[in-house]
Image 1 (cartoon, rainbow, N blue to C red):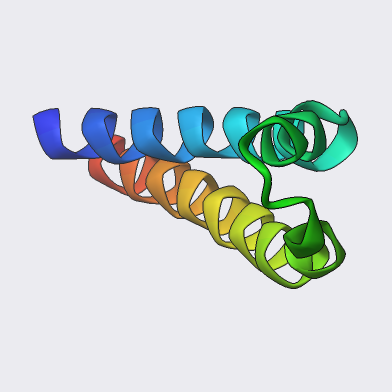
Image 2: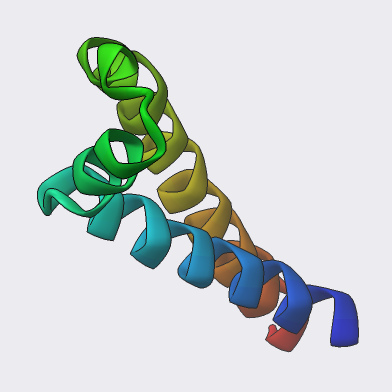
Amino acid sequence: MKEGNSLLRVGIIGTVVVALCCFTPVLVILLGVVGLSALTGYLDFVLFPALFFFVCLAGYAVYRKNEREN
């Protein structure tokens, strides 16, 4: 029971963090301040698959939680 809640928590937190970095310029500003602004062109190749992964992880955790209750 505790593992399902942990998996759901990681999925939701990961989704929120990646969505925040994906849809706001937070990560672009951070990379510019650090001096790695040349990497901003590659962010979409990392952030969109990470967003997909965390959304699927949260969905899987909800599915497992519902299966255990039934």
